[in-house]
Amino acid sequence: MNELFLSCEHGGNDVPPELQHCFAGHAKVLNTHRGYDIGALDLFHRLVPLAAASTFTTLSRLCIEMNRSEGHRQQFSAFTAGVEPARKQHLLALYRTYRNAIIEDIQTRIAAGNAVLHVAVHSFTPVLDGVERRLDVGLLYDPQRTAERAFAMAWRKALRQRLPAMAVRMNQPYKGVSDGLPTALRNRFPKGYAGLELEVNQRFATNNRMEPRLASALHDSMAEVLKQGW
Image 1 (cartoon, rainbow, N blue to C red):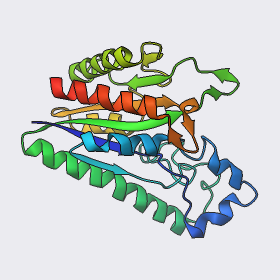
Image 2 (spheres, rainbow, N blue to C red; image 1 turned 90 degrees about the horizontal axis):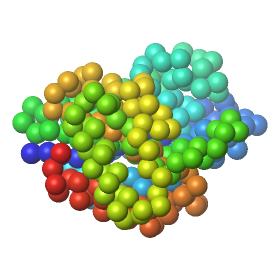
Image 3 (cartoon, one colour; image 1 turned 45 degrees about the horizontal axis):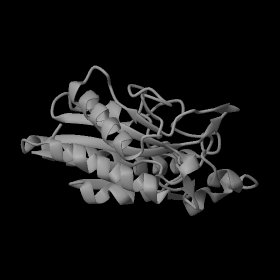
């Protein structure tokens, strides 16, 4: 059986009380794309009915980056890189709890003879460093993995049938093989696992909610491809 696992690593901009002081005078940054993926959690919840299992976190990426490997130079932001060791260890414990729960769930499903498709739901800022990103939806995957490539291609086709004017790009605005949760899981599970990252332009998000028409099209197109098999 093929099963869908959904995750959302940048669902919110929460900061633990003991770290509030790290953002003194800079609280506004938590409400920007640097603090979390605007609209991603709303989209995640709209896709959850399609999944066999799902998980998300609302801890701000400026506290600790859940989508980076442990030890990555960007795991801690400039706001938390210098916190005392005990508080840094607490953040690492939250990070490990989140990641290990995903690993254990997927491992159980693969051991039971199932194939797992993992889709990590993200969003991206329309303009980065003064450069406009000319795409609406990005599907990130490893081109060397047949199942990932096939699902991404079929999903793009199904989405474009519903929204023909939508600019859907492969491995943009980031590369699908860059350091991230799916990349780590590919290394952990060479068989039985396929991982994609869904990236949606934040211009479609208002008040942290994704545009209903796009969210519905993403849901329905994904449901179509899942029904076809991958």
